[in-house]
Length: 165
Image (cartoon, rainbow, N blue to C red; front, side):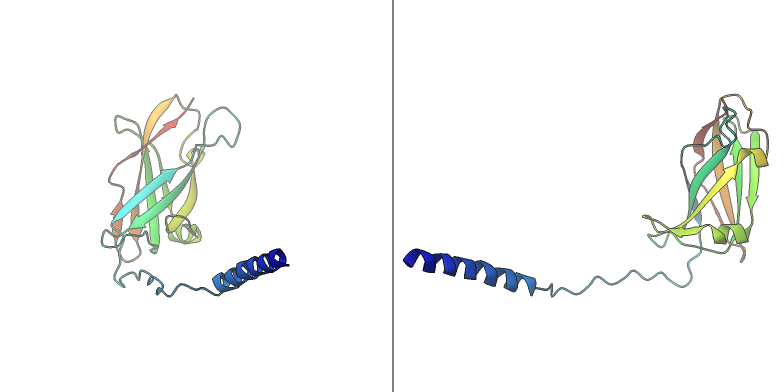
């Protein structure tokens, strides 16, 4: 009898603890959301490139999938802004290989929110600017955002990518 009473008290204690824990809530206030200043204007463009693709299966990479971020150095998160983007692909010696102008409506349609924040997911097709049949080349990709309000933001460092085969 004594053992079954002890067993019942243990079960009752465990159940009480479970019910008590289920009712606990954190009394800490939620962290306030970071509110961007109203006058943010991009002053830096950053490019992240995924592995190049060979969409036409000819042995030469032709498609550059990428994510573009616009930053204002006064704010820690990337932002969206209305405007177009000019991309340039150059050789190590600075010779232009290809250039693209992405209009504002395409830039706006490429907006996504990812782990970093406000982003533009897009692709560049080398065949839109030149042939993809190129010798193996260490190229440099750069970009410049031109806002509809005249704001300009560009890459500070060229992004190295390998094209050709």
